[in-house]
Length: 355
Image (cartoon, rainbow, N blue to C red; front, side):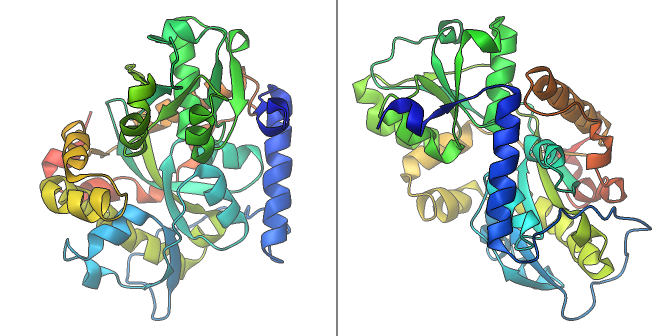
């Protein structure tokens, strides 16, 4: 099959139309309830008591699922987790929100922007900031790419609705390379590996542990990692508007936020056990690689104030709009500030960002 039939090159405004139509069409097929986007805005005070008996949430946060037991937090969950969908890609989460199959998820900052662009109402309820790079640009085997400057004229794996997409745009902007001077190949990040291996793209951003797996297998064939100082600042918990407008579910979300933060802090403080639980048993990397990955990470930080996060999210939305990928939007409404600071209050001071 010709390459252009399999890998669609991003066409600025047309890509947004394609993404919206594809996602909405798929979602409608998933659930008879998914006829309109959930646009009911959360109102009123955040419920302060425990969620009522029988409250259930479907939570797509795999790290917390794996952390609760060993961290001794399992019994602190005051509601029923109906399921833990093993989904993490932004487009998949948006689909789950629209189909009413996911109530709460963790993603980078860009999926909420993408959801807003296609009319799926959802809000951010917790924020973790990462002040260090999370992604490395992996090259196809045999590539002569050494630096971002070499990206000019190359095919780059690009997922508009995921963090990796913004990492690409920020890296190009910093290098002074216009979007039109590269070929942005529209792919979900789950297909980056296949595209790199088959040389359908020249370069794509990979995070851990995927990066280590790829370089371990293809490094001998000339694949390499190109590091940048581009930061993907935000990791967010977010939920559909309709969930946050339901008092029982909102109370459940409120009770989950501290557990999410405490689970991440536990993983940082118990790295050997977390390496075994997540990297080795769940992700299939060696213990040695797991140790190397963890050694490259930094202390998780939860901001007391969301002002910096909102400013970063606005900058990201503006960058996407300037590229013609989403309409211009004010991101302030993407944050449910009733939840502001809950994650930070749940962890010791060393995990709080106060600046």
